[in-house]
Length: 139
Image (tube, rainbow, N blue to C red; front, side, top):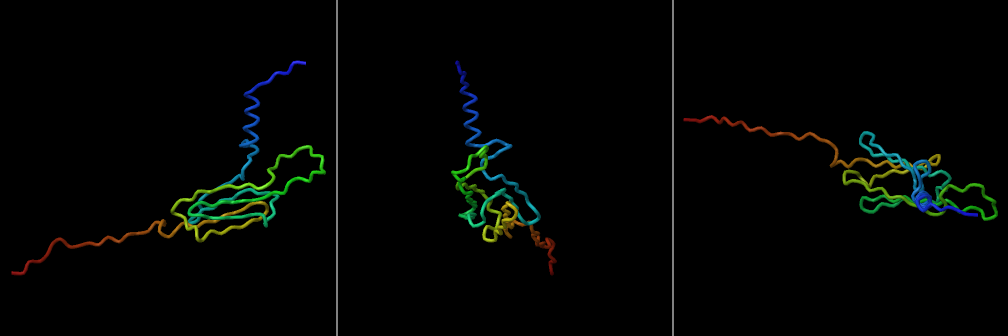
């Protein structure tokens, strides 16, 4: 029996396994937006034990780590598409966010981060001083 190999198809399959596809991403999918004076990010982490979640910040980089337990070796799996083990994602934040005031909440498989905009980055009015150019001349 003659088997045909297609190196491009094999490379494409390997790339999908490592980097994922739009329909099945390997990393934590995220939505992010600005809501008034806050930056909000939501990361999908279904099936993650909240005790395994770890959130670190160093300078302006937030690192989210999570762990999904390995599969029971006694199972005869038909499909195993969910990422297992420890995985992480980093968010690079701008200087205009107050990283000391980050709030995090994990509910229904979604990790929600709320980061306020720093006071120095909020729009403000600047008062303009006015000097009268005409001075009275006393004689």
